[in-house]
Length: 202
Image (cartoon, one colour):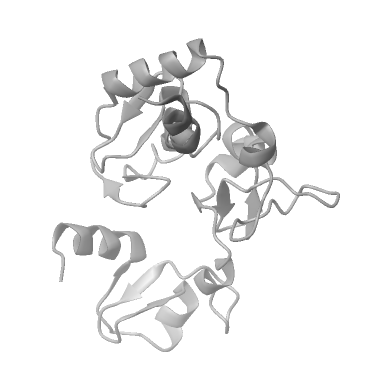
């Protein structure tokens, strides 16, 4: 492999959760790879629901899939470390055009957000995301891959999360919409509908 080629493709060997070179790379069923500790941290919050999702493509899995060590990625990352190539913190950490900036960072350059919280309606970088993994009340919040379209997950009428899918009207609604305007309709949780559509593509 050419030295220059490694430099150009180095971001492929970085974990999309911690933005650092992969440590103990594991691959999940959708094909994406993460540091073992990063994906275990993401899935820790999903233990109560029993539905686990990929932080990148959001594909869901039930039950929790086994984490498979990616031997080839492990070898490539070890070679990168031996050649002294490390992820450039300036390029990887700071939000650029098209990235989601952390809502908590202050100053002119904000760090790149890793995840967005559908309850808090904020996006957080690696540092500011830690409370969602350690504070008991925040662990229950629903985290998704960083998104600029958080408001699309909120009901414009009731300011509630769109957690329900109305199969009758074929759109996402909140609990209050279900009680008021969609009474008697065929409704399921939005997560269940997503899982079913992935299993049975249209």
